[in-house]
Image 1 (cartoon, rainbow, N blue to C red):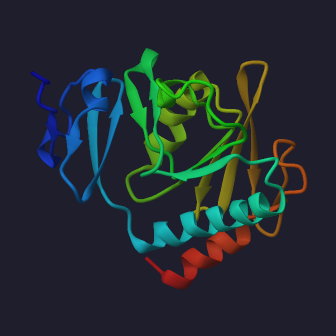
Image 2: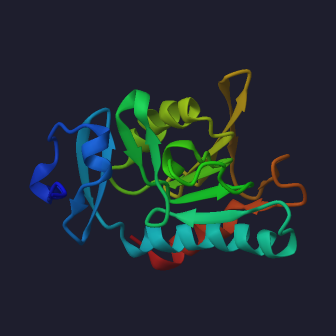
Length: 201
């Protein structure tokens, strides 16, 4: 008889759980659940200000994908993909993940399909997770670039993998960011921050 799925609820924040248990758990709707070093994290679904920023990042990437389908296999959001970091007992759901190639292993998809670019948009309370915890985890997982979009600071922290470490660059409007991973792509962070400003807090 199949084992009943573990239920995860908001009151489980701080609960210890293995990655195997968490990966098959069912979350109470209306919240975002992640596992950080074996500890369940629970947060509210981000607000509209966060949403419009994620949408603008995705829009720019999808325009490039349409123009250069050979460069991008998939662009996924937090509810469409996950990153399983077994060594850290962590499961992450990035705001945007860009995969240049299709997966090699469908059976162990989220433990082995490494996005080339991961983007996190800072929301209230996510600063430590996005700037500190995920920085190390995404490096360990093999992500090639990690962008942290911060509308309050009006800057994007770009981390690029080099010799097994991150090199860091900060991009602020009106600068446009380009990456060797997506030849011809230009990331306009100014329009992301304009979207955030139009919505307000």
